[in-house]
Image 1 (cartoon, rainbow, N blue to C red):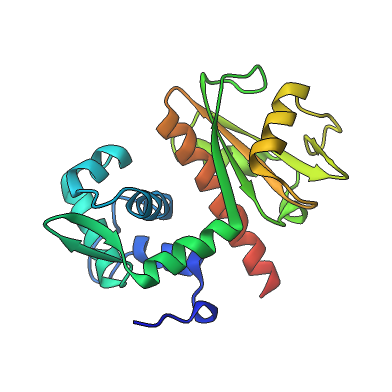
Image 2: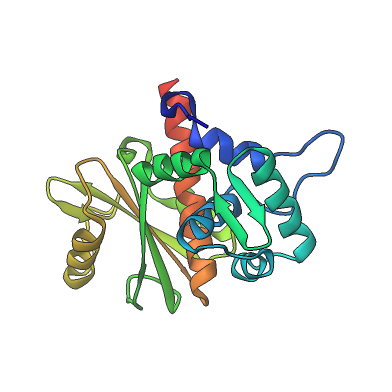
Length: 216
């Protein structure tokens, strides 16, 4: 199957899979679960549903629904050997990768939790105010908090405070995430790596959604 990249909105696809399907109830997972599922299926050859459920910290019934909707959307193929991305799934994953880049981070005094996960979001600095919105979204997703940084004039700074993060952390983020002018870095923090990742990616997707709404 030939897939046209120009006709697909990856954010809309993630939202669609997590939306309520009338007349049923809303799924017990979010667009962030959908995103991480796509990333996992695309990076692990033949991952099974039980393994996916454990990684996403979802019940097997909920994960079964997520897998079914991923398949119905044409993003994955499911066989006895596990799940793999279809050509459409590969394109959607690649398009998301053009918008966000992520990396796990060591403990830092800048955050309140022992586990930290950073997500770079491309070209959305104009959507950030004080970083409170990103923190609130991360909290709802299960993190203990989030720190937002903006990349401007060759440095990372904390919005509304005119402060830079600690030098070693800033250098690590710049080296690993390769930010460009106008990019934003969100650091989710929690007691576990998975919760820190969920918080950071939830805040990143919300920031991208708001940016897309403004540009329409």
